Length: 172
Image (cartoon, rainbow, N blue to C red; front, top):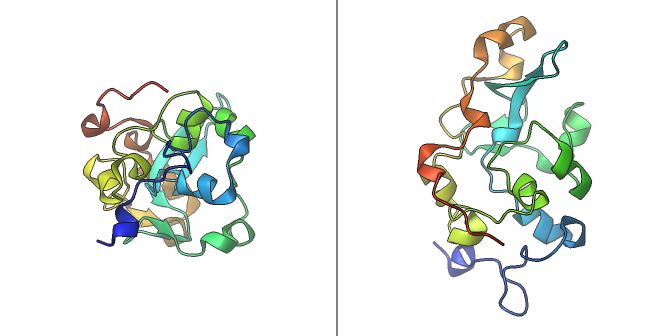
């Protein structure tokens, strides 16, 4: 693994850049680096029309690559997928479907990044090791099945923190 890939993201003064700052103050590069690459937000979610409750499925977005747990066309995703939502500092605090492990959600709530997050661990693999990644857990892509079959793919795990990742987080 290259030394650059292993380095933790720190600010010019040696501090971890996400600490003590508002999400709206982050540079684009800092903002993008917060994504741990778990792929949970790329799973198809269903909303109960009556209750508003969100249900995750194990079905990936049409642009999702199950082999890498990444978007196949990240730069153009919003143009290619009508309901792909771009996270903003404002929406990170209010989107109820963001996984409980999402760095954007955690920081918006005033919490710190967990030890398994790549910016803390210095390793992309820590997301898989902690059981956060959807790698190997996606049953199909949305283009591979009829919409009515999505109900058979509702799962609870994307909305939960895996046991391996439940070590106490540091306070900011």
